[in-house]
Amino acid sequence: MKDVNLTVRQAKNQDQKAFNDLFNFHWDYLYKHLLKKTGNSQMAEEISIITFARAFDRISTFDEAFEFKTWLLTISKNIHLDQLRRDRKKVSIKTMSNTTDLQNLTTENHPSPEDILITYENLESLKNHIKSLSDDYRKVISYRFFMGLSYNEICNKMNQPINTVKVKIMRAKLLLNKKINDGA
Image (cartoon, rainbow, N blue to C red):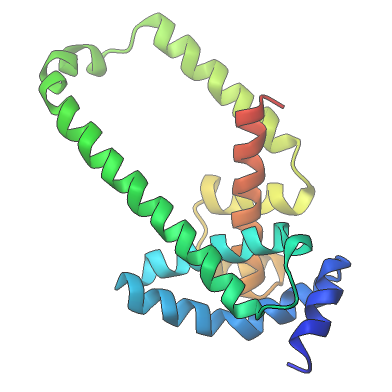
């Protein structure tokens, strides 16, 4: 890469090629760092994708007095810590709920009419949120989660590099999550 600081400034001006250059230049370094840290290739890939999505969403806050890759490492460290905290909470909640599993067994097998209605309403709401996404994001969500296509299959359908597809899926999921949580 010619000059990382110049590329960052271009990315701050929403230059898509600059985003791609930063992503391609730093991907291997970040992924390998996370792979060593987590020992899990799937988790390292997921955290890397989330890190780039978060960094690109907040590129305007980056201080060029620091190295861009150091900033990425800091973001990835925070994401990893958040995941570890969430996983610990899930384990403790699961342990607490094991005693009630037997009590709920009979009701879980046969949902009530109210449960069916709530599920239908939630599904309709989700469909509306997905429809409000841009065309590219709607496509990647549909390909990945409704059609069950692999990243490579999506790359072929959209004629885009795999890293671009991964970032689009992550951004689409983040936007969808924000819309659902905001009730937009």
